[in-house]
Length: 103
Image (cartoon, rainbow, N blue to C red; front, side, top):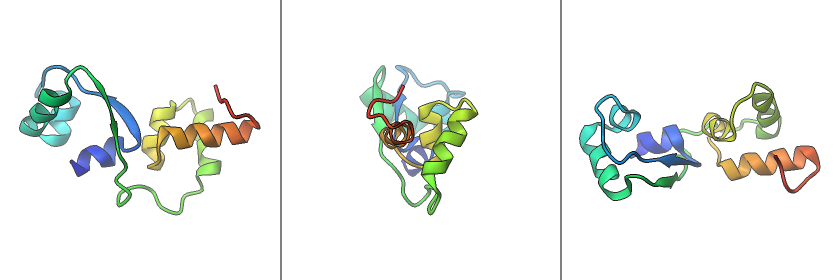
């Protein structure tokens, strides 16, 4: 499951109700493992924890978040790119805007 954490760590991911061989989960984990996840969580959005071993370390997130946001990256994509949580991205956005409620 380390591949799942490396790819989606810190974000919520929709788990399809059925496994397709060409689907992202099956390509990432293999059909058998994807089937096991689908059996447990199919049709739900699950939070995938971080894999800190594969996250980008020593990166200045405070400067990277606004830069990626300016490139129209979604919050989830920023979190995956930087190896942090969506919540952390929102916190950085809020502090950059001087607000506690980012949009």
